[in-house]
Each structure stands twice: as C-alpha cells, then as structure tokens.
Image 1 (spheres, rainbow, N blue to C red):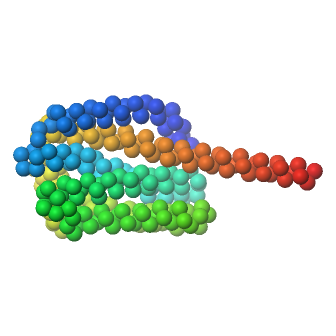
Image 2: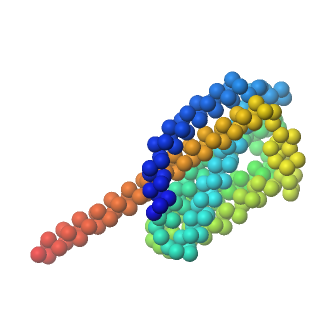
Image 3: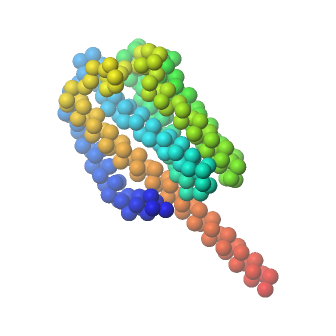
Length: 237
C-alpha cells in the first residue's frame, strides 16, 4: 500500500522534526508567550489542550474514513489503519479530558461542569472506548470488524457536535480562536502554532508505530501458518 510505504520511508524524518518541534514549543510556551493576567501560569495548559483536541479529531477522522473504506472494499489494511487511528485518537481524547478539568478548576472554580462541549467530548470518549473494547474482546473475525467499522462511523457524528456545541447551545467553554472569540496575542498565537505542529508530528509518530505493530503481527501470523502447513505436509509424507 502506497501510504504505508511512504510513512515507512519518512518516519525517521518525522520523528526527528517532531522532537525538535517539541523543544521549540516548550521554549515558546514557558519563556516566550506572556503569562495571562487573569489565569496566570495555569493558562499555559491551553497551548497543549487545544492541539491535543485537534489531534483527537484527526485520529477519529482517520478511524471513521478507514472504516468506511473497509465497508466499501474489505481490506485488512484499512481495518488496521482504522484501529490505529482510533487508538491514538482515544489517547489524545483522554488527555483532553484530563487537561481540561485542570484548566477549568482555575477558571470556573470546579473541575467539571456539564457544559455542552465537555459533555459531548465525554460521550465521544465513551463511544470510541466501546469501539476499542469491541476490538479487543470480541475477536478479529470479519463480522466483528464490520460491526466495529459501523460503530466508528456512527461515533464520528459526535465530532461536529463537539466543535459547534458552544455556538449552538452556549455553555461556559471559551471560544478564543473560533467565531466570536477575541483571538490571541501574537506571542501566544506563535506558541499555539508551534504546539500544533509538534502535536501533529507526535500523532504521526504514534500512528505509524501502532500501524507498524499490526503490520508486523500480520506478517508473523502468515509465517506461522506457512510453517504449520509445511509441518503438516512433512508429517503426512
């Protein structure tokens, strides 16, 4: 598959650039971007919380698109891409649900409110957690893969709900960089942009590592079956 070959070739470059981007991002966050007057140092969670949310979207988008392609034309590669995307997306989703309440405790005086966007994000976490539990505990048959693919596609519907929840239903969640938001100061915007690039690199690294594990496992399974068949032929002979 072309995508797999491309990722394999550029992986060392992506990993190196991602590491450099994270070092630059840490410098920009703690030494370049100013400390926000109201929130203080806690506001700097914003620079990792928002990129994590964007990468969460990316992981689940890949999972849903690959699942759709698998339903159209069943190919194990698409299935492995879907699971790998869901795994990484779920990891970043968990990080969003941890970092968000840390910020909220300072901003709102409590770690959790049933804000529309927060609630929708929690629902997304539950949906893809169910997807992963189905994949882990229900075997790897084609029927399970197709059921999981349908679940991944249905769960994706929650992503636009999360993104537009504040505008549609209000709530306490800030809209700094969205429609109606006040925007960021140039120094803060630069730190956020660097964090976005660093998290994108991290996503690609983690995604490829998980996909490569599955590709390697498939190769091992094929070799095992070949050895088993050869042993059976020798036994019969």
